Amino acid sequence: MHFQWYPGHMTKAKRMMQENIKLVDLIIELADARIPESSRNPDIDELGKNKSRIILLNKADLAKEEWNSAWAEYYKKKGYLAVNVNSRKNGTMKPVQEVIKEACKEKIERDRKRGILNRPVRAMVVGIPNVGKSTFINSLAGKACAKTGNKPGVTKGKQWIRLNRQVELLDTPGILWPKFEDQKVGMMLAFIGSIKDELLHTEELAAELIRQLAQDYPGVLEEKYQITTDADPYVMLGRIAESRHCLLRGNEPDTKKAAFLMLDDFRNGRMGRITLEYPREI
Ligand SMILES: Nc1nc2c(ncn2[C@@H]2O[C@H](COP(=O)(O)OP(=O)(O)OP(=O)(O)O)[C@@H](O)[C@H]2O)c(=O)[nH]1
Ligand SMILES: [Mg+2]
Image (cartoon, rainbow, N blue to C red; front, side):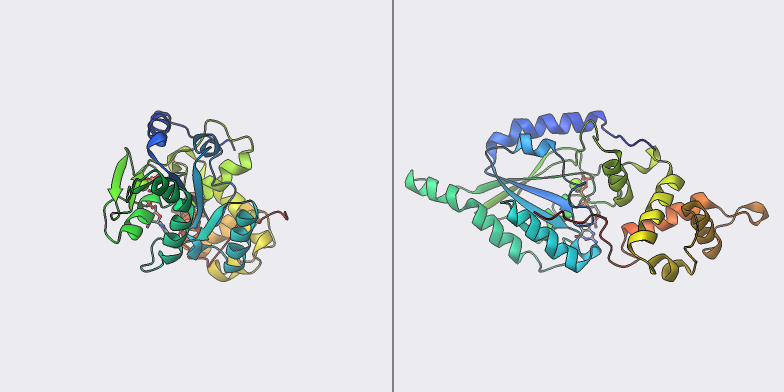
């Protein structure tokens, strides 16, 4: 299966981000805690060179706690400010506010020396589609300023949001990059719902997810769908269809429907907390 999604609106969004980068002091990059490496757009390094950067591992509530800590450690060792976040939960933004302050310390000091006082810090919030940028901004602002939705491509243009006298945030549309060097990255992005579903072969995608889950999380599929996992992933998909009564006329298993259902279960944490990528030792 081949993955690629780089429509015109992303080219446009990237241009907008390049034009606005000079206005910001800080980049807040959201990655998905379930796939911290695959969900980081390599183009952000080029865009954000010379800017302070924070990495937020969002949707941490959907990923395994022990891997969350390991990933945050991994990025800290690489020299980033990194925090795990659940943007849907109220009252969890304190550590984020702390790192924003930390990241801007130098800038505020520089301003102070030049006699500039109280100029707000401006941060650009960036990340792949559907990673939770707008939800995060709303959570940090404590009110619904930005439109959100559980599909990629909800935010279309830029939007400045003033948090308070000290901080202004720029919400941006989620962008991918023109070519995935490794198709596995594309597949991971498809698992979490950052690639438009209409472009995907859902059964093949679900079978790949089943393959990985059966290998890395023994017991999870068995428990969720009351199936045995001693078979080929497509056979297992058929078993999920039967167990969930996804049937076509003539009682044939409706594997397409089962594929949608199981991807949706995974994306929404209904199989429990699952991390799909693990940090390499550094
Ligand atoms: N479980 C969980 N869901 C989250 C979290 N953050 C965001 N979401 C959900 O993820 C979906 C996408 O959120 P958005 O904020 O619209 O994502 P976005 O990055 O702005 O997406 P685009 O504008 O399409 O690029 C929504 O259904 C949110 O409720 C989180 O920390 N945990
Ligand atoms: Mg958005």
